[in-house]
Image 1: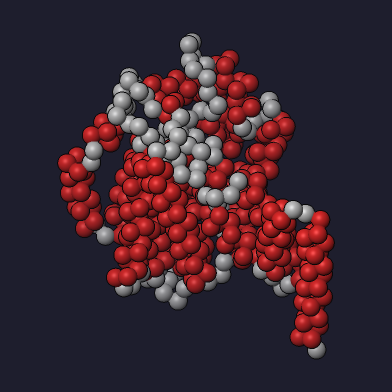
Image 2: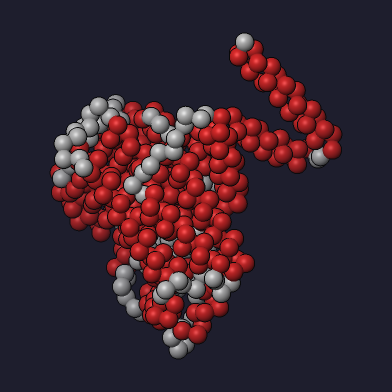
Amino acid sequence: MIQAVNKNKIEITAVFIGMVLGVLGFMLPITSFIKVAGGLAVAVCILWKVEIGVFLVVVLTPFLQTMQLVGLIILSLFSFIIKLLLNKNYTLKNTPLDLPMVLFGGMIVYSSITSFAPRSSVFIALVYVSFLLFYMIFVNTIKNSAQLNALIVLFVFAGFIVGLYGIYQYYAGGPTTQSWIDKEMFKNIKARVYSSFDNPNVLGEYLVLLIPISIALMWAKKGWFYRLIFGGIAIIMGVCLIFTYSRGSWLGLMLALGIFAVLRDKRLVTLGIVGALMLPFALPATIINRFTSIGNLKDSSSAYRLSVWLGSLKIVKDYWPSGIGLGSDAFIKIYPRYALSGAAFALHAHNIYIQLLVETGIVGFISFLLLLFMFYKSILSSYWRTKDQFLSTIMIALCAGLAGYLFQGLVDNIWYNYRVMLTFWIVISLGMTAHKLAVNSSQFTVHDLQ
């Protein structure tokens, strides 16, 4: 009887959708109709299964615009709420990050309301909150290792496409903004790639998160075919990262790979040291010169960042309780009052930690640090206890990539690009899901658990 009712509902829904598409096909031009029909199909799929929304967000983050991704998240949230209402026995799962995320989200909302540019800050706060909600949807939707494995593989393949496009861009001679290169110090650098992102440093931040995961898949998967595939993907993304000429990203990746090697197999440390010693003989002079310029204040980029950091810290001194509000509009209203004499124009602090202090004050900053502490505590705790090699390898790769990304945050506002910010929350979600699956695994040792 129930099956018959469900069948009738499906048939009625199909007829209704067919009628709507027929009307739209008559009224709209073909290109507009294809977009509307595609959007409607995606919406129906997400409302049917919230997991589809999660997969789409993870895979399409590097390719869609921010508001398109927010739209997918909102649809997924709506689907998730319907699922909760229809299943009275379903309960939300608690995670160790819940409290710091609530504190951080609350401070995001508060600082946007009290912002010096409230209109833009409130809009940005809605984007932030949608990303926090995506974490909640993710950890409550992905329930088994098969789903997690599929998500991680698709996540890495998306990075592969981004890397391939970046390499194509380099050899095809894509446009390069002159402000990205100090022509006096780096005359031989002709281009810096940015692939599907807006900036080479942003692309570098994204790849630092993805490359360790691809290496983890190469390590964890059985069979030479899979190892060649994921090893090749890691190489493609690594080459693309080199072509960004992002020094912060290079250092971030080195740190990430070092952490992965120490935690996974200490023999890799020796291999890494030998490889690092050989690099000066293998890499072009342009890359060597770029790398050895790290910390050189004669480089306009380094001097500019130092100037912005000092000016931003002066803002923190006066606005540490609640910050000045989210976004560049609030920053450019206040920063000129505190900028060093003769300092160049800046849209943000070029340091994620100073930026959070400037935007959200001390409470937002501490809640963010608490979130990171609870993430690493949870992941490393389950890493040491689980005997599941796939989960343990993935968890340390996520930790390593995130560490490299956060290290790059010392010299960049790694949340300036919202798609890279969403990638951060995807990594957090993947990590906490892996932690949950490891704890629930029969291969998890429970001694010393409190």
